[in-house]
Image (cartoon, rainbow, N blue to C red):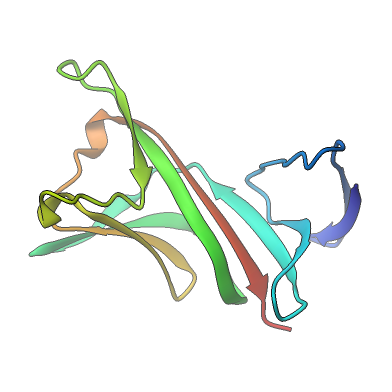
Length: 141
């Protein structure tokens, strides 16, 4: 499969392998798929660390990159790697759901173009070594 798209005024092409191969990039790219309303689906991967923007009872962390013109979020998922001396590192999926304790739940939302993490427990950003958030969406015409 081959998909042509424009990025910052430059025509680009993604050529995927057969058998449903999927590519990931930090640039906004069309997936080649369409949503139920017939609109093309786009994908972008965010790999920058978020910053703490609010800590009044609920902790909010915002990623610096914004995604504009989103009409429908098709899927949003990701993970972060916590590399601490006590755990030898682990990967935590996003969003993270805890059946035992709501304080450890982490929501992943898109708010006014900003990808945001919301949790009741403060995340130690100094021990988090990598972030990956994958968002697929349709755009406003």
